[in-house]
Length: 129
Image (tube, rainbow, N blue to C red; front, top):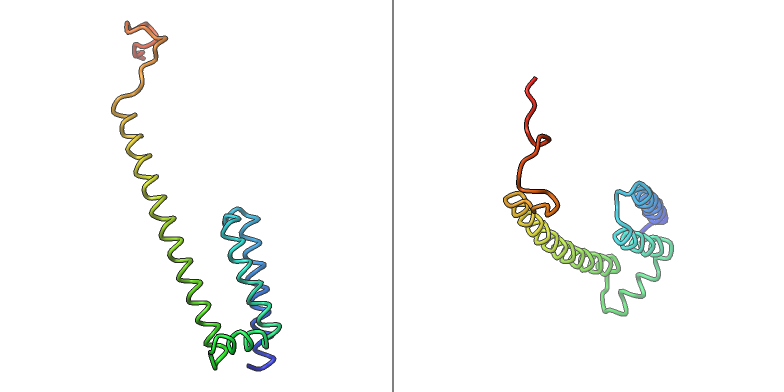
């Protein structure tokens, strides 16, 4: 890859990292996911700055084409992220269902206030205007 392409990838990565930091500061992205994406951005910036590292990693894995090793790692990482988000979605779905059931129970049978008497008072009567 040419030097210009490495510089472009590095600049794109820096802008992406700044965007992630901006989202965290505005509370649009939880910090646990920000750490994941910032870590990925740092690795990509490192590989864009020092492309020979990716060549050495690819050759140690027996992969002749270094970008192929990069895409293999990226696809594997993205697969793990999708599995994690699927697990998180299932957990939140179960929690939402439980909260909806509890709300339905509370609306169907509101709790009785033991301090109030069962006899209605003047305050409970509607006022006609």
